Length: 263
Length: 272
Image 1 (cartoon, rainbow over the protein chains, first blue to last red):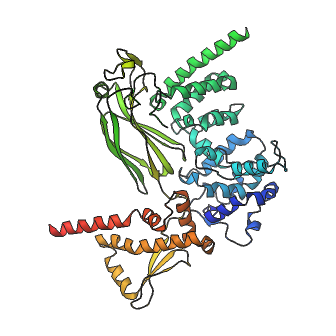
Image 2 (image 1 turned 30 degrees about the vertical axis):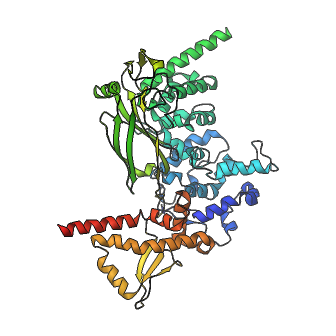
Image 3 (image 1 turned 120 degrees about the vertical axis):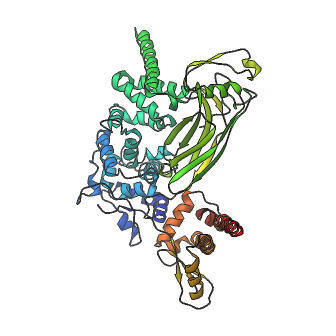
């Protein structure tokens, strides 16, 4: 596989400054960057080659679907194909913004359409905010990486992969088995606590054993409790099993209180 | 993660006026293309905490976070010298470092030097409980994304002209420094000498400063130049100083300091 092409920084800067002007283009079915560039340079060769068989196009990595059901498969496929990326390269906006606008345009248009989600064409500010969030990386925090339509897939896999497991994507699969995986991402993975691998894995281990932990009415207060414990205790030092035990106690208390209030 | 100026459920040395003893870490961080190096020493004047660390009831912990790459790690140790190396590819931009002392076993904890409000009280502690904190420190890891094709953005060439001043050509893929025939010959003779790298920097620094000046004042003129793409990215993403000379020195990792240090080193060897 030859090296991937990415946007030059200057082109990216210009494209981002033209979101308002280009807003209607984000509803077009086909990629438009080349036409918009009008002969000026819109790509440079990177040093990164995706891990793909010869003849396989980058665009074929992602299954095109309009809902979260395909996110797990796509996250794993993208992470495997881009397994050679370092974290510093994987937070490079040129990479993900160019992939979202070119190779994965059709995926983006299906999975993250500008239409729908209560964004009407006439809500121009909302539409522009949506484009900035899903098509560009606005900001330096890792949260933006988990919001961008393409980078989120790689980063979710990166933050949950565990090479010590027989299936390294075991935790990735667990995360996506939550019925509201988008909410668990926002509540846990996007937060500071989500960067603490023992805490993230302990929580997911508990959820694997106790399906009630996957219910929003329980997992949100659990995560809140874990977060507040982290205020006076460095959770990073605790073995995963200890964190899980602590969460188990909190979950049992929460379930008992809930059943008492309904009886 | 800010760990000082908090209300903990026990006296924590280094936090507000919880205790009269001190806990501080003197740190030094540097980065090269391979690693981020953190070194330093921990000073703890609290006898109970020092005793707990010595008896392995507690440990010093060096906690690092980089929000840009979602990196987070905690390094536990019982000696007060800090020597940590982490592959620099994990970092981009701001790296927060906190040094703490934390319990490693359950037990009880009391501090004779604690604020009178805590006088005479023993506090139960569990593994991970924070016992001492020093003010957090931030480092800025300025590294080019390794997705870019590696290669210098500058090259030094023979202009083919006699006894002319150095010129800089910004029209190609790289910033081209053109030396006179005589200067280029001298450059070739010294470039592999111990002082040669330092002296070469004195050629590169003014050229890079000039390039940054031009790039900032008329970026549109260099849209198709590879050197401009790489340089602009470094300037924009790394919070470089506005002043071109300062920015060039940061990019070249302070060549004047290195040149002077190399000069002193050569003098010392000569005196021996």
